[in-house]
Length: 237
Image (cartoon, rainbow, N blue to C red; front, side, top):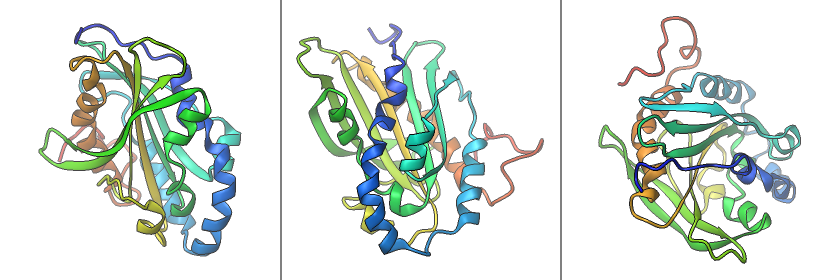
């Protein structure tokens, strides 16, 4: 089972984005609390870092995904990175999304809302879990599992998510408070689909073990250093 290819449908690319319309109500309140605190230059620098993220990480290759322009506008998302990564040897697949924008809008809207809004039921979580990468650094992410309503199959969709200013991901209990006043914020999602066996349910963990050091290096790089022939995003610290 562990080496069987895991198929991710096109629907998985849009599930997390499907609920961005609900941000409209909360964005107004956050605008009042954070008005004037967002720095457009720092947000633009954050978007540039997303553009430098690699499309191949070790044995993981990827295909692009997209977020609808309306959802970007409603969510006040300045930029994003979305790819389906697949491991060349195991066939495991993970949809990865990293958003960038002002802290107010990006600190709201957990993915539980968008999944339940498109026909899924929450079957486990959300819980905070530690993910340790290949450098032995550990970050905290939220984790939840979902299953389509009225479907008896054992297939589940798992989502990991968290926030960061600089690639050090965390899962605070109240991100709106924890990140209030920050000029730029990143939000990470990974989504995988599998049957409920221990082997199959290691897809996001396996990807994040390889990817987190690279994401951290790029998001922590000084502005203006993530482009040009001298910059190689795959080089580890």
